[in-house]
Image (cartoon, rainbow, N blue to C red; front, side, top):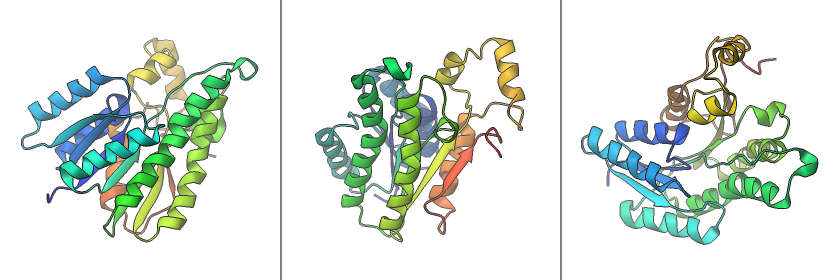
Length: 249
């Protein structure tokens, strides 16, 4: 196939779903990975099929923390498309709680999904990639840079992604570019619910702390993803903070 192929982990909803839809609009074959949200993935697949002429998309269920499932996912992608040009690691979960009360299971599950998931997907992607201009984009979070209460597992995992990216960029250059995107407050259902931003007072307080004076949009993230994939032939090992200036120092 002449179309490039992008695989986005954790893309049945939120930022990943928006990115999957927009890449399909741009002419990419889009692989939507999900772990449990089958109905969301199928709804996104139906939306792509209904709204984008000649779109090619595939929804695939796999737990990215499981080597066997990740390997089978990439095998399926290659049987279907015979290529995978772009890997975007967005998969992640929150299991917040006080540090002293956090269970081993909540610690490991969050790190396994974010860090081990990125490791496994990057390895399986790289072992198969045969081209000369591949792209891996890992997704972090501003809390990786500043921390937050009751999120030691999540913040630690997202911080690990930053150095994981740098190590891969050194090892995989020049054939594969590896970069990180670090979103700030983005207006997704998860962020609005977590911070109760449907309450005007909370929204005003959040926006007043952002120099851009607004929440980010999923399109802000997609534009950065698309730039890295299409217009950044001399960029690797970098972290692109897309936060409206929130953590600017």
